[in-house]
Amino acid sequence: MKDIIITAQRQKRELKIFSACFLLAFLLNVISIILFDTQWIELISHIGYVTVLAFFIYFFILFIRLLILGIGKLIFKKRK
Amino acid sequence: MKQQEGSTDLSLRRFIKNLGHITGGAALLATTPWLQSFTTEKLDEIKRDRTRVAMIGTGSRGLYHIHNMKNIKHAEIVALCDDYEPNLQAAKDLCPGAKTYRDYRKLLEDPNIDAVVISTPLNWHAPMVLDSLAAGKHTFCEKSMALTMEECKAIYDAYLKTDKVLYFGMQRLFDEKYVKALQMVHQGVIGDIVGMRCHWFRNHDWRRPVPKASLERKINWRLYWESSAGLMTELATHQLEVSNWALKRIPESVMGMGDIVHWKDGREVYDSVSLTYRYKNGVKTTYESLIANKFNGMGEQILGNKGTMELAKGEYYFEEPKPAAGILQLLEKAKSSVFEKIPVAGPSWVPEIAKEYKPHYVIEGKIDVNHGLSMIGVDNDGSEDLLSAFCQSAITGEQPKNIVEECYCSTILCLMGNKAMEEQRKIDFPEEYKIPYLNF
Image (tube, rainbow over all chains, first blue to last red; front, side, top):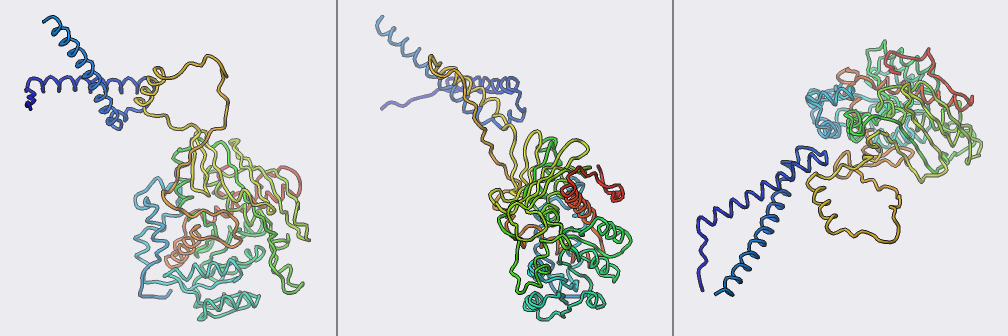
């Protein structure tokens, strides 16, 4: 059994990616309020939805990143 | 006024507490000025006093008031009066300690009576109210105000001169769901009022059993013009009062039709009426009442351009439901664009179906809804609170605003309605019966 070590640098990077996802979700909320002419209070009242959306985007990006990483490793193995 | 050891009336206290706005609630007081007299502080001030009350008229409604009165800690029934022995005996059984009278004039001479509650046929309202005020008694009289416009005006004039408290049985003024609902209406929750619909349906002949033929007109007084103004003063008066309260105006004219459609049993008053009251700003109250079908029950709908308030049920509906939050709309749109199928065949139109309106509630939790079927009264419809408020006023001597005026206006409107139906023409509010309170 091998210990998985998540370095501080990686943690920082993941936090930065999640923050970017949250910012994106928040911006989507702002855009939708303007687009559908709803109330600005939704910036606070619907923060839960925004957080869930941020997680969804983060995991979607994670999936893409893992896919790229997997394909990259496969190509690297073949070359070896 | 008698001094007593004890607590104040719980019902009125609960009513005031439930409203929750009374102290410092300027918005509420602006729309319900009669409640200004009933703060919890004022209730505490009178907790050692008790009004000595006489009940004039001990028929079904009189007995209903006696039952309510027995729950009111700041009141004591000291005298009873009725000229029909079985009714007087029924009341005596409930209040064995009270003195009994057959002539109300004799009762009014009793100096140990502070206040009277009148629950008699309509034709007796005016003479009894006028005599009672003249005798220096605080007076509560059942609705409607009187049988004729002249009598209403005479009572109103006496009210202006008296230093005694005068109440009429307009219990919706003390019904929590009506007070809250109309406050919401005035705050613009349903937008601008564009119309009002009131109805009261029962399936009952309105008759009471008569032991001998000579008592027919005495017992079934509601059925004859000499003692009653029919469906209008018995039922419509409450609902027209609510319409005026909602719009803060008085209708300037009325048209209508009335007939005896089903109960052709020798009665004189209509058993089916349909009227339209028109306000100066064009808003109309349509009023319908009949007593040979009860399917629709009783209701008052205030129609606004943004929603509808169903007062009797304590519910309201919005014309257009509140839109979903922007983020949800965006996600829904994204989902639709990805997953929604594009039809290649079949109907290319969306069938127009009736919208389902979702009710919202004026008061959360279980409330008492009056379906209008009872001939006597229902629990928690404001009657007990109104009576309790009257007894408090009899102690403090403080006349609450608007109660007499509201009853005056709605009674005049009922009598105008009857005139319109009788003469088959539009009737305008008579100049000679306009009072300064009115806002046309």
